Amino acid sequence: MYTLSVRRDFIARHFLIGGDWGPENNPNSHHYLLELQLSGETLDEHGYLVDIIEVEKHLAEVVAHYSEQMLNDLPEFSGINPSIEQFARILCCTFDQRLPAGNIKKLKLVLWENEKAWVSYTIRR
Image (tube, rainbow, N blue to C red; front, side):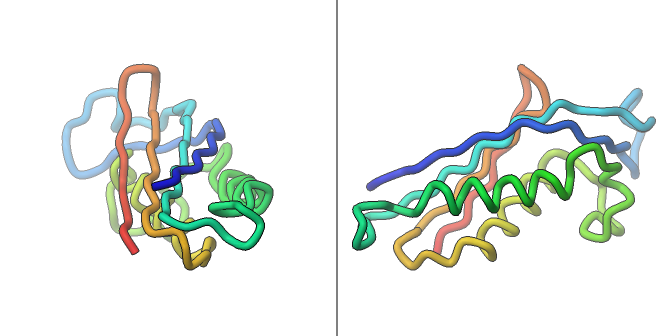
């Protein structure tokens, strides 16, 4: 199986709701590192799993949407705790919709919140 991975870092803000999360209950920033892994068994007619330029274009657009934003204020976080787990799922589902390449059988998104903590979310097609 082939896997293509791209990374991008960005800063976003949030505050957690629904419990006593200490300092995380107050608005705070995280320097996120997003890694998108795309996997599949076959290559396209050009010998690519997927065009990396196309992936990087979508990555830049998605990151721009969240960069320097307060996640709690965005509609996709309405009514949910903006945890790293929720954020990883939202990001992965966004890429699943944006990258329709038929040979992509698995999308995995790894989201680092800091140098010690990360979450991943996987979609199998």
